[in-house]
Image 1 (cartoon, rainbow, N blue to C red):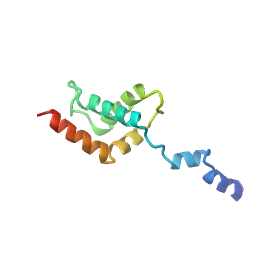
Image 2 (cartoon, rainbow, N blue to C red):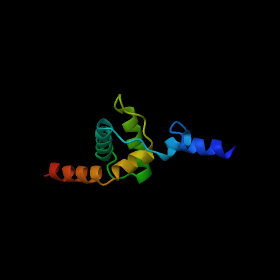
Image 3 (cartoon, rainbow, N blue to C red):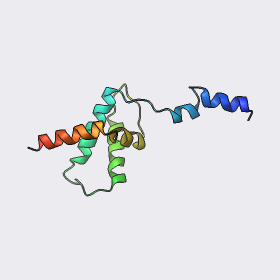
Image 4 (tube, one colour):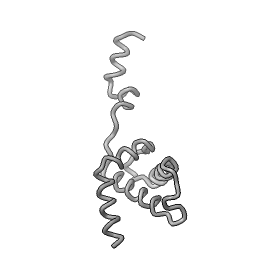
Length: 102
């Protein structure tokens, strides 16, 4: 592969290399669905906290993508975990759950 072709493929916004490097921001509907899916899986009375982290996030991934907004795209487990762990969503949901349990 020529150097010019390699450079173009890294800089070209339509190339796979660029899209793997750049993540798409979640739209508000996707953030809301992530919260709903997280709470749905987290509050499952049959399983609750008796599941490993990978199993938990696999279930969130399946629930999220099954119920994703029409305008949303399929998200990877890693993307969901990263968006959740950005501290804003996780913090706000933890606060909500604490107040709701009173």
